[in-house]
Image 1: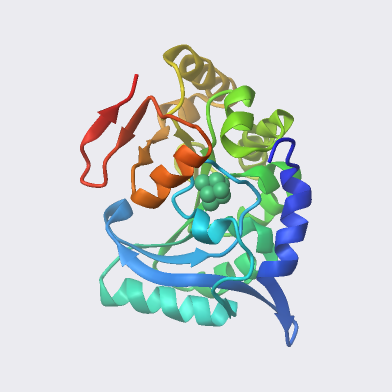
Image 2: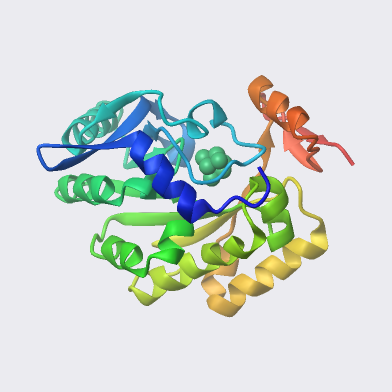
Length: 259
Ligand code: SF4
């Protein structure tokens, strides 16, 4: 899908994954789970995304809008808190697709979580936080939120090749970091970058680190590297798109180099 506009796609996806009931914004989710990430975290996996990453581990749900079930912020809160306290986790998150497509739903959930002793990790590609400055300002109103902006590649060219979105939109991922810092989130603590490195040569990675450092040195020190995990459905998607990672991991954690 060359030339995709993720901002326009967000609006289209919104109408498939969101609905208003009694004045409350509900979002489609496909599952709730506990897991080992972050040392233990309760996760709600949302349906729908504004990118079409050719390595996406959740593409069977993130590329669609008609799967899963509508959940109110209250129902999501109850499920996340239930899993977290039962398993003694400190963290909760939304993952699976792009949570910021339904920002009212997200902020209602954060309102409910505000009274809990839990840290909320927002996993996002950041495009909408970069595009809509007020989204970043809204998140800054919560002191137990950590925003993990996941970059799709280390250059605009990689971004375009990996996501199907036009390369100029890559800049909004950096803009998200800037907006979040401007809104008052602490760099490296309340906001940090992750980046898909499976397809990136070393020289591009260095350029990426330099760019982060120019925004704030703490961002360059707190990069969370991501690599493709070769689940069968991910291998299928990579092959379909003729994409070969330079480095990936088998599901059992063994690295695989394909140079
Ligand atoms: S941004 Fe994340 S959820 Fe969306 S398509 Fe890319 S990898 Fe999948």
